[in-house]
Picture 1: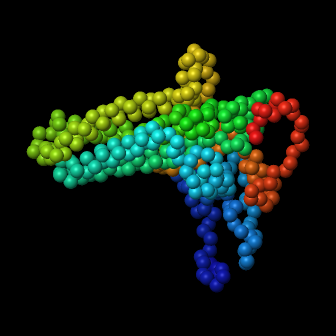
Picture 2: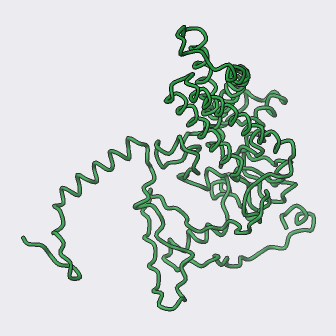
Picture 3: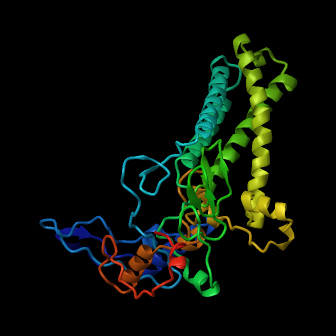
Length: 387
């Protein structure tokens, strides 16, 4: 069979079906081995909410493919604020806690100490105190630790919006739901109101002054990565210095006189960082295995109700996402298999978008919420409802 022609260009005939099947089987094997549950080639939403169909010459955008049961899709609608402002309010475009001066100082101190250690190891490499490859490895670990710290500090920890509503399962299994007295909105299970950030945070573990941010469901991965990289940096430096001090008797192992003082200070810092991050890692791992965060654990211990806990362990896919193991070491936002389930709430706008897609309707931007019949409530009840 000769080549077929499409639009005037020669193209070879399609490969046999079994080749395509073999390629799909190989791709499935690779995705299974790397833990990739989300396939961007098939699960990514093919609809662009920012596409302007009214522009001259613009063609109507095709409707998204209807998903089968068990398939994922990524909601490509960006409902976040586009305002170029720093803060923790819902209308701020860039998340940054600038109201806590002590937290700002402590977060800055983390960068100063990490950069100090990186410069010290670099000087050891320049003065030929250690091999260059060892210095490069340490600097890479420092870079990943600082990248994780920046991502954790500048990421919304999972704040609850004013439009949050209970999930369908929550509405079916519960007759009443918690409300936050400060935010005047729905309060999902395991969420807490942070007085520093002045927001309710889903699955909040604690407010970390070293991050100058809360640690919640949306940035727990970045916080855990920072602890792991910092712990590795401290252990790596202590092993490096210990080997040089106790086991290396060669003249090449003698540090430069100026660098020796820097190394002594860095040794003290590494011991403190190793002990602190070890305790924090054990604290985070305990929370993942028991499903009880730091705040909830302290409350249960204060009321002596730890034995009555019925929380389930938190699966790792609710921390690192479902994109695959190759994304775990990097401080990038995870993709959750069920965003509403992980966050503990839903929003009417997202539910309307999903309903429009399932009904094969043209999604509106923003989605128009159909008015629902309301019932007149007593004034004493209205006082407790969000404005």
